[in-house]
Length: 132
Image (cartoon, rainbow, N blue to C red; front, top):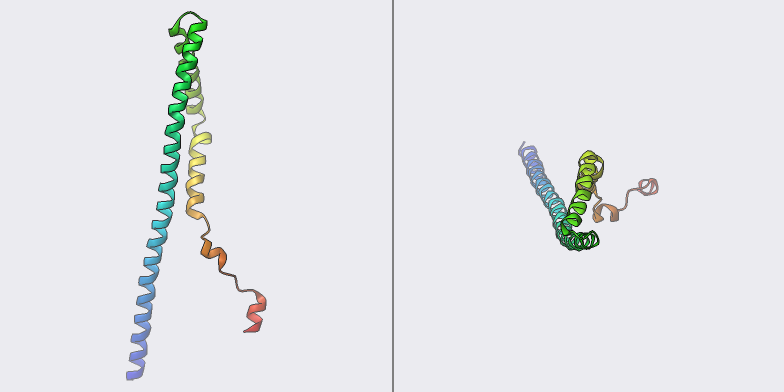
């Protein structure tokens, strides 16, 4: 009787240790994926801010050039701002297709990407099962 009780206790201890290890593994995987997504977002924001500053200065130059051609600086800025009004309207209309879906797909692909360890572990083939 004592033997059965000790076996049940050992099984319970192993199940408890397995559960705690599994929970820790899930937490670590969640942290890994979150860090991956955050680092991607931060790098894209840094690159995006540099591009925005570049485009800002290019647009100021284009506005001044168009204004010089038309002999009125305000007309150059008015034309460039009208272009951005049309562009913003089109972006608003096609927001789902141009912005929401690609970002959603990016986050999903980051969350669902295969880990290197999963790829490196060979699957058991039929030949391996026959050799057992």
